[in-house]
Length: 226
Image (cartoon, rainbow, N blue to C red; front, top):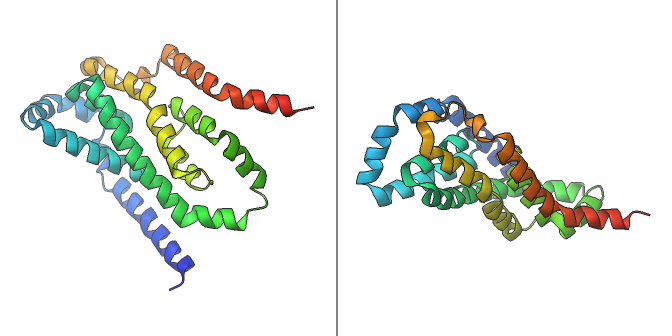
């Protein structure tokens, strides 16, 4: 089997695994309703197995992100409720970053390298811009939780962005949004909808932070125009 055929087979297997997990009903259990219904039982188990609960939580979060399963926001709410804001933020940053890295590496190995080779001429200008300001762009995308997390992971794997750059921008960029959801977990009983946590005030604050991150790159482009 050639290297290309091997990658195609792995890609088909990876897609089939994601589809199987999505249709298995496992992801459907990560809902706000289920969390609120079982919150007391979960809290009781966590209090009796503190260290193990952190490990299980991080591993589940890695799987959710790596396989692009829905439920990340609910997981963060659960972390805030079960562990407290600061421990939850630390756990989510570790779990989400590790999961994102696995997704990023999968996309790069299975598709990204071939895309870069086949469309090198067409991507030359894009790659040049990413070499200069890729960190700012990625950090901006992470700061604004409206951008689909799994899509940023996948598309980043198709670029020439380094693994180190992708990792630190993910870890740092998700902290503000994660903190907002983890803090909301303290009032889990009163949360009616996950989307309500991203209030206009929260989105405005994250947008301003992202704008300051992106400003140097935009100013550089403006100065270069005649």
